[in-house]
Length: 472
Image (tube, rainbow, N blue to C red; front, side, top):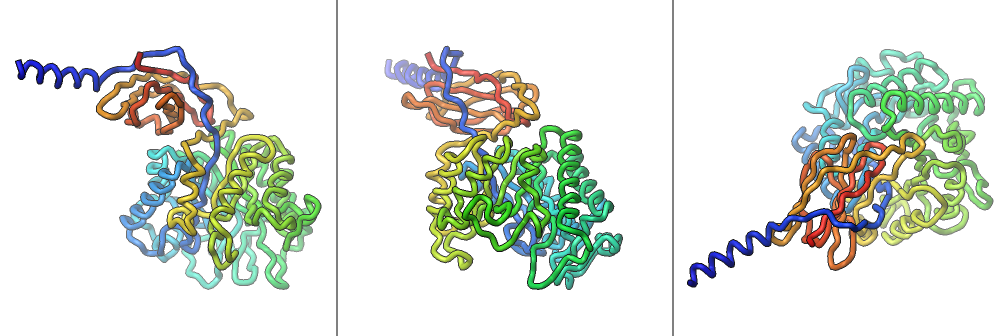
């Protein structure tokens, strides 16, 4: 008798613990949408790898650890630098290997860092936006240059500017070369975005001038043409790849009223970034709003409010996480960053989002920032959609779920066009998003839930109708 009771208790528990879920007539709340990005800079070994010449295994371990930390913080995108100075952080037949990898320009690190980053990031549900510097040729003229670098293969298209060398944007060859390099990466790699920073022309330095004989208006025309052509070309090749630009945070001094700036990016950098936003030549603009909330002369909310009135596409501000407790901005607390994130969720129109400069400050918990972000990113968020490109929802996935032990195992089969699965769970009567996973994962285990909802997400950020299962 005792054995029979023990048998019943054991197998009865096993049956209950593996209880399956079935469709229920319930709908979860809409998924949270927010672009949560971080720049990963390779130039000067700012973020990754930590030093030039680190072994391939060491580089890979560092990048995995960085992505693990970002995933744990519920971040969903990295802006990964792949072309700091007409070189490549990927296998290229057009330009030499980046010296930040091995210490020598042109020397292979023994693997493909961009391919590795994409594979590891996508496995964690994180997008990869490939970050290009389109016209900077050398950050320092004293460095060794590979035989296939532009300074050797096309020196007539370059100009020295102090200690740096620049590819002249007035040269059609310069613009063609940069566009060709970017499209080569778009074609060969499974990237989610193309990203350009603010270096179209060099920043003013002392009394130096960029000796090209061109007026500011002519320079803007060259850059405008490049930006417009880039957007069209990327969309023609892979329309789901987002095009983003991160200009200097102030369009012009005095705009909006009361704003001051040390430079005029419109005149001096040829950056008519407001035009790019107004004309829809970007899928997002990320002005570098690296200043504090106050004082007024460079106020984060004042600038963000102005930017978000300039066009219909998203404005996801760059925020200076690296300045927390730094010599560059002594006394800046981590709360300055979380307050800016809160403001970015409330100010203006369009989809939420922001980008941290840079990833290293989050990984090392600079000034306790990562600790505070854990309370700011309370649940995973899906990347905002691009309805101006595509608004067709993917098919709903085929799913099943079962209660096993102390958790719920959710399984799915890939839906056509889906790249991610968003899993929401109802626990103690409340819904929350618990995971946004790669659709290729096929299953995840989450805390025990009375109901689950699984939504397929495609490359454009479109969402299917959710499949909702519950224990009845």
